[in-house]
Each structure stands twice: as structure tokens, then as C-alpha cells.
Length: 290
Ligand SMILES: [Zn+2]
Image (cartoon, rainbow, N blue to C red; front, top):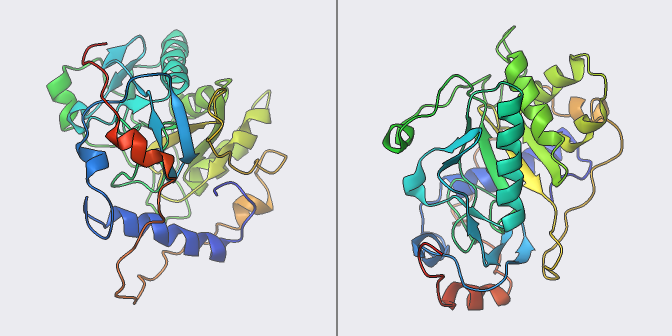
């Protein structure tokens, strides 16, 4: 659903959904808490089912807690699961970031062991999304030290501008590296950060097409890969419009205004998951350590 050309007003209306999801505690308002409680993925080959914001995944893999060029934060959340292609993409990005002289990337939420509805996110449901913090000032830390880290905010979630120098060249480089990973289809980043990237001199600007503005994303970037081969039930997103996305599409976000909270007292009811996801939720788990 993300990626089609929309005006700021419509964008603001859409944004209510993630905000409501954020405010919804696990298990409330019709969200099945079983998705958050299941600790392991399923056996068998990886299968992506449904969309980024309404789906699940069988045969997900766990990204190892640390590796060349990256470290996972808040491991206790058990959200370092995803399609093997997402895992490989993050590992490749870590190696490229390390080769570029960046400190270890801080990988935040990917997905749950079987995907499905997940608190704090409107997407991250089908094993193809991952968040990476923009903070780039830490060495490799012990796992327990990574539980309580604070993010570095580049700007406010609904702020139109970035203080001068708040986005460092290294952070811009990180976004470029992520957007040039071959399997990455989209990067979501705060509109003011996208505008900053647009204003920079780049030899090749084609990667800017994959960097799309979205509110929030002021302390992390969101990486999204496309539907992998062998997952016929994976639902593709609409293609991004052509061009570097630095024109009217970006400018339609400004001035940014936080939408007023809905006066509706009805709780948010998520759409029903694809039927195949019920079998995924109830399938036997992988043997731990496999
Ligand atoms: Zn995200």
C-alpha cells in the first residue's frame, strides 16, 4: 500500500493506522497475541504469505545476534526473524558498511518468528521488513548493553526541517548503502531527511528512487525487500513512481502536520489475516539451534 503517489492530506489519513497500532497493546482490539508469544519459526522452506502489513511467514530464519558490521539491539524482543533473503541482505549490508568504515550497524526490529501482527509497527508482518537505527557512534557492545540503548533523533517526527549538520555524512552514506543493496525495493525515511539527501551531490542519483518519505523514521531507516522467488502467496507492493522522488511527491509532505487524534471510540480492528496464516501459526516449530 505504501509507495503510490499521494498528497499530504491523504498521507496524513493513512498515518492514523500506524499510530493507532502503536497505541494498541499486544492482544487488545482483536489482535491475536499468539503471534507475539510464539518463540520459534516453523519447519520447512520459507514461504511469505500476504502483504507487508497483513501477512505472515513460514520457515523464517533468525539473523545471528551479531556479525561482520552489525549488531542486533534489544534481542529480548525476539524480533530478529525474517525471510532468508532479508537475513542475507542485512548480512551483506553489514559487510559493506564495515568495508566503508562505518561502525557496527544497530539492527532493530525485523519480524516475529512467524510474522503476523506486531506491536509498534504497521508493517513488519511478512518477514521482508527491517529497521536500522541511524545512530552510528557505538562500537560492538555486549548483548545486555544493547537492551537499553537510546536512539538518536535527527529531527522531530512531525518537524519540517533538520537542524544544520544533524544528519551526518556517515548517516547519509548508510542510507545510500542500504538503498543500493540489490534486493532492497524501498527505504522509508523521514521526509526532511529525504529532502536533505536530495540536496546532496551524488554521482549517481538513481538509488534515491528507492528512498521514500514517511513520517516517523527520524531515528531509524526502514528497509524493505521485494517478494522473494518461491513465495506465490506473497503480495507485491505497487512500484515506486519513476525519478528520484525529490519533486512534487516529496514536497507534498510539507508543511508537516500531525493529524488530530480520531474522535471515534471504536477500537481499531485489524483486517483478517490470509487464511494460510492460521496453519503457519499452528505448525510445528523448528528445533531450537537448527
Ligand atoms: Zn520499520
